[in-house]
Image 1 (cartoon, one colour):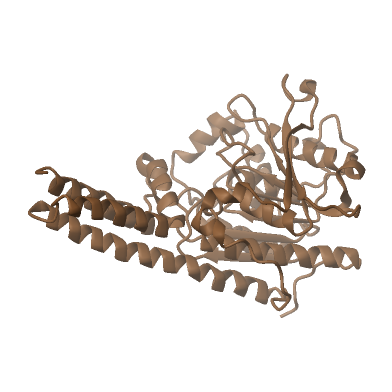
Image 2 (cartoon, helix red, strand yellow; image 1 turned 90 degrees about the vertical axis):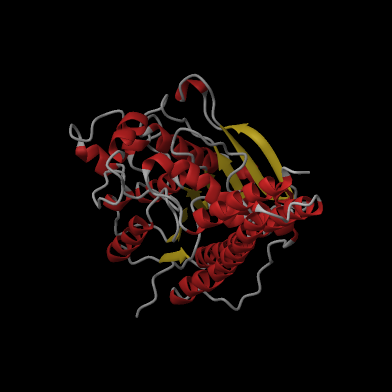
Length: 416
């Protein structure tokens, strides 16, 4: 086929472009989202990408593509495969970074914990089906009158074998820039793994912008926590031990939930409910809504004004600061584990570093920070090697918190 050399060249150009973008994602506004989505798939599914490219290249070479411009395409493919192997190696380095964070915080790494199923790395959709986990979908946790005319729902992840004991609970808050996202496809590897090991997980929805305005999103997360506590007996959870986790916009809401315990400003109509959490795990969060650190592009505040805050920053800068975890650190914050990728082009990693440092200065409780080499935004959606290392580390962190809770010991930062 005369066109196959050109097809091989096209494959080579596309492949090398994806690999380079994964290593160096674009940060300018025009290419921000396309670069993110391309890097996201390539980075976390590097071996899958390599196998797909190998398969397509084999088919084209078998059709006679290895001549003329096809030779250039083959060279580009070889370069792409080399870069994909580099990307895969970066994923393995996450284990070193995450273990260092645990070790520095005095978390015991010797305890044998259940490993995440490695078969899920080969076939990612398996993460949705675990024989040892029951999932109950779309349980309403609000009245329509409370949330703009429609109820909000949550999914429950729990061990299939239940012994009647009250179990620790974890609330997962999805991301999506506060405007999109759905509980059904984020946080799944972590929730199923924890449920298989004795936890009860709750993947919650919340009202989305632009229909919703801040702080509706945070109010809804707190409604979910209040509902879980009120129904602890029937859910089989310990109402005195609930932790929260989430990524991106969900990471922002996770941090705000941890830092605004029982604040009546965010609990309209349920001011007396206990919405405190006993720990938080923040994945690639947005920590500086007001952009006080100046690490986001000039257009950032205009977007936040339109989709989230619904008021100009110049008119009410204090409202932006109150919505920024960076400005809400407090001495009585619960233990927090902050996890961020070094290659995140949507939520600046420098903001995560600043938040971790500021929280450590304010709080005596445990504050862990792990910066993952080569990781992009939303890396944990797929069960990659990086995700597995993080999930197992998060389990160790939460296990320490829960064991301390049962002994009446609050997790404190080790003295240096």
